[in-house]
Amino acid sequence: MKRSPVKVKPEFIKTIALAITASACLISCKATEIPASGKEQTSTITVAPDNSEATTLKFDFGPGKVQAGYVQVLSSTVYTKEQGYGIMSKSGVEAVTRKGTDALYSDFITSKEPFYFSVDLPEGDYQVTVLLGDQQGTSTTTVKAESRRLMLEKIETPSGKVEAHTFMVNVRTPKINETESIRLKPREVSYLNWDSKLTLEFNNSRPCVAAVEITKVNDAITMYLAGNSTVVDQEYEPWAAWGQMIPRFFKPGVVVTNYAESGESLKAFIGEKRLQKVLSVIEPNDYLFIEFAHNDQKPGGSHVEPFTTYKDMLKHYISEARERGATPVLVTSMHRRNFDENGKVINTLGDYPEAARQTAKEENVALIDLNAMSKAFYEAMGPEKSKKAFVHYPAGTFPGQDTALKDDTHFNTYGAYELAKCVVEGIRKNNLKLVQYLRDDVKPFDPANPDPVEAWQLPLSPDVTVTKPDGS
Image 1 (cartoon, rainbow, N blue to C red):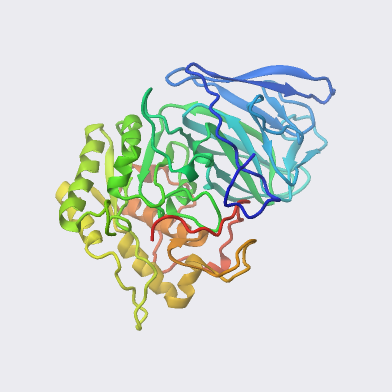
Image 2: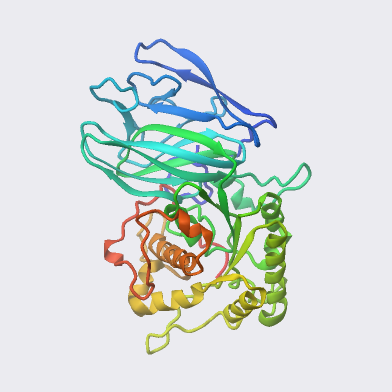
């Protein structure tokens, strides 16, 4: 169940407690199947270890006939550590059966509230296919994974249609080798990103889930992200960052692995062994996206000067990635929301964006100028309307929120989504190989003409906090 010391919605589910259940060889989950006959059967599902032939886990959702080779998931199939998979939902889910002979298409699970499905899995990349729809009704489903990574955005199926949609998710642990691990911050320990499970969130007005298939893959191009709170997978609403939005834009073949964390600087990312972890798993043809500045400019132990130590450390990241055959990409940090009397953005990042631009030129690496694109984005919205891209909410908007939230550094889901589109546009302009894997509906984006915020809709995940992330 989903834990959260900062949780303010007790009626929603609690996050999963940390549970390491994978062995060095393979993970084995004992399942209880209850076929339409009502007679219980036991079966075992397995996931192959790294570098072995992939095994697909197949789950048939609903109370009807069970497809051969699948494990049945009922409304009562609640996740337990002993079982190794199951549903998590405080509000409950509904299992529906329709007339029909096809075991996969004729039944499903739905809910009026978001619900989660979790499976214990070893660290690695997984291709996930979800079967969505209702043979006698419409469905609208948004799928997020782990810590609110957006995978599928508002999949609408007409009445009578059931569709398969596929995406890729990375499951990771802090472990680097037998003796070393990332030094997680206390708040991170219970995050969905670190719990040795794959967790899928099914959300929107009427999610109808008929089946889930999960296959381990070893040949995906991995897009590693190194950065701070403007990049991280924010665990709680209403905060968000571009790193957790960008998976939505890629087809299978590319997996986004986000090691960013709130409050990080170039030095801290190394000191907490996050870079060491990335370098232990990055491979040729992978990418390392690097975005730091907000915390590096502050006084203290993490401070670096822009045209000296900041550039030197960026070059260190670049050389380490290249040494392993990966492609480094520099991303300039986006502006804070700060306007002058003429409605123009005031630069609060000093010389750090320019230092990143110089480093990219000197090292001949791709540069995504998110700093310049964010300026165009904010100014297009203007001083007042741009608040709708940030965590600016009056008191009482969320349970437990006694005072107004006014944060000009961190984004809500709309702002994070628009910045992710900026990064995608930077990938396109640099003609990186990743362009080949953009989804068919991804169009060129002009940050000076952002998506209308009035039309923006992404359903909130259940867990909310009024605590501001580290960094400013």
